[in-house]
Image (cartoon, rainbow, N blue to C red; front, side):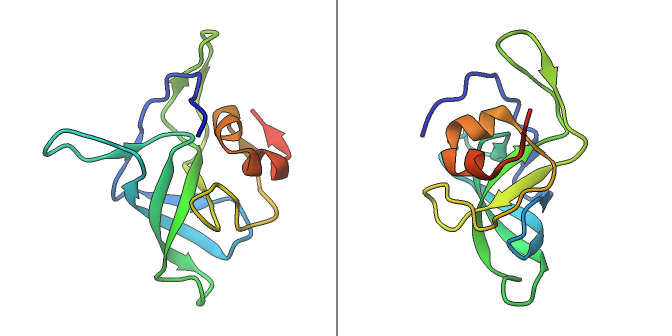
Length: 133
């Protein structure tokens, strides 16, 4: 997994709800855990753009509901700073559902913009993304 060049603020703690922007069948996800996150005792792990999370599907098609899936955060409301000094924030918190933990997306169409940092880290997402910000 490639390192992210920006300083991403972790704006989505475990337990937060995010929507999806793909056609995988899931509509709403709840974050259960953050892959690769190490914290001190008592601190709740949090995710930001480009982080892989374990999430349970809360709303969606009946065959995918109540399952635990891997997902990547591609947009977040909390602003973060890029290395060139610009600050980026999106209108909503959005994730993309993955087939496996390798980073291959389950859906074939993404709605809306995808952050550049998520596309740098996961090439499978960047192949399908139409708008990269």
